[in-house]
Image 1 (cartoon, each protein chain N blue to C red):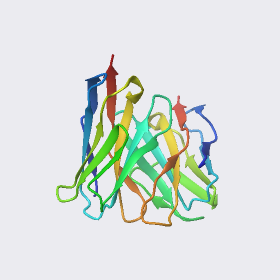
Image 2 (cartoon, rainbow over the protein chains, first blue to last red):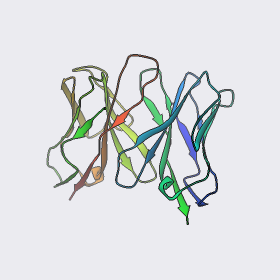
Image 3 (cartoon, rainbow over the protein chains, first blue to last red):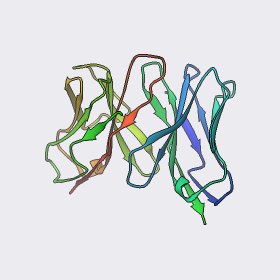
Image 4 (cartoon, rainbow over the protein chains, first blue to last red):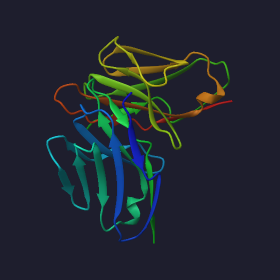
Length: 111
Length: 114
């Protein structure tokens, strides 16, 4: 069946450095790729998404890139801050309004 | 502002009990979802409903059932709770219209089965 692989499972970066999380998906029909952030004890919330007709999207310090040929998309966070510490999930859409989720990346920002 | 609420934040039940988890959304969303979240396993779909009285099995439906009698409410039922159902349960909703479907999550219910 369809799946989404997410790497790394844990990422530790120095405050101020950049962080990159990568996902690959298997369903070539997927056309929507959201990223969710889940802070400790809170619900997952959408932080950025990208549609299949776009290669890159930026929103302040975060950006997402999509390579449809390689079935690969990535989240980039620049100038990391303590409040970026969280678990990040990638997902890919299916044909029946569901999302297939990656296993999550725990991002740790070291002071 | 979309609001998804869940009936309990924390719940402790005994093995064999019947457990009801309720989710309510106030944005007239057609789709509703129940996920289970365990460390290192991400979000695993238990059941999905795309309309009132309609349901589809997700990846891990065994031991669970669902009910959707009204559009805004989606209930998850553990027929006979077992210790391996101790987990965080998240409800989500999304709309069908349009091609892209952001999911909005409830705060979660942490269920412990003793």
